[in-house]
Length: 418
Image 1 (cartoon, helix red, strand yellow):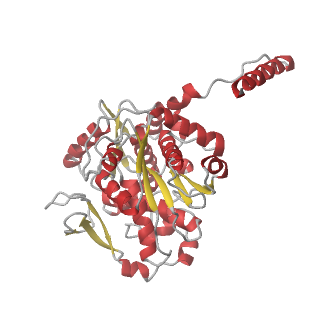
Image 2: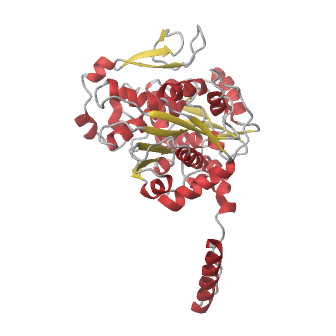
Image 3: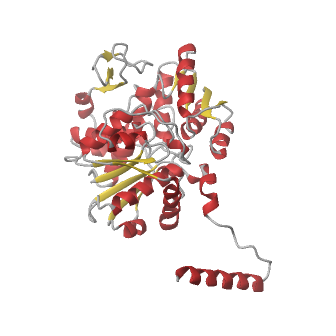
C-alpha cells in the first residue's frame, strides 16, 4: 500500500516528494505529510489495530514510513489513568491522565516522535541523526540512535537541568551545549543542517517526526472505547504536539473509526514563556517572540514554530489556551504526585495547573470526559521541586527516637490543620 502521496505545504498546498525537506521553496510555509486516505481506509480497522503490537506501531498504517518500523519498537501504548482522586478535588467524574512519564526508552512523549523520525531517516539513507532540544528530545534521540547504531549530535542550551544533561551523556552521543536559549540553539542547528548531510529530526525530518505525536490521540480514543473525549489539556512548547493531537482525533473520525469529534483542545503554557497563550488571549493571528524565563524549561521556546497553528486549532475546536505562574507549576507537580502517584516534570506541572485553572473557571462539566497529557518524568527536573518537598525525618536507630519524631510530626500537623 502506497499510503504517502508525498509532502505538501500547509500554506500554498504545493506538493513535494517524500524526502528530507521541511520548508516550501515558494512561500516558505511548513511542509507536512500528505496521505492517501482512500488506500488507508481500505486496510485499517479497529480489529487490525487491536491485534497489533502493544506500542505506537499498532497505528503503523497512519504513520509516515514505507516499510517496517526499525526504531522505538516499544515506544507508546502508555497507561491511561482514571484520575479519581484528582477528579474529586476538581469536580470532574471523568478525568483521565495520559501518562507518558513511563514511555520507553527515555520517559517522555518524545520517544514517540523519535521512533517515527529515526525509522524514516534510515529509510532515506541517513547514518547520522541530530536535533535541537530543550532536553527530552535530545535524551530520546541519543538513546534511540545508540539502539539503532547511528552517529548522533544533540544541541542543547547550556543551562539545562542536570538530569537531562546526564540523560544525554550516558548514551555517548556528541553533546553540544550552546550558551543561549532554545531559540539560539535552533537557529544554530538550521545553519548546521545546511552544511552537513545529517537527519535533523526537528528540521529536515520534521514533517515525519511530528506525526508521531498523533499516536497520543489514537491511544486516547482506543482507551475510551473508540470515542473522542470532550476536552483535552495539552502542554505547548513549539505547538506541534497540540496540533497533531487534534489531527489524530479527526483522522480517526474521517476513517470511520470513531463517531463525530467535538473535542475542545486546550493549551497550557508557563507565564515565563507564553507567546501562544498571549496571542490567543489578545486575539492575534501571529506570535510575538519572547525571551523565556521559567522553570518549565522543556516548554521554553520563545518563538514556537507551530504557535500560529496551535492558536488556530484551539479557536476552531472551541478550546482555550491559558498560562500559569512558576509557583503554580510546582503546586501542579505536587498535586499530581500526592493525589495520583505520578511524578511529572515541570511540563506536567504546567498541564495540571492549567487543568485546575480551567476547572475553577467552570470550563468543564462534571460528567464530561477530560484528558490531560503528562509528557515527561519528574526525575528529570528535580531541581524545580526540591525546595518544596521538605526533608526526611532524621532519627537515631531506636524506637524511642522514632516515637519522639512521630509525636513531633503529629503536633506540627495538628497545628497546620487549625
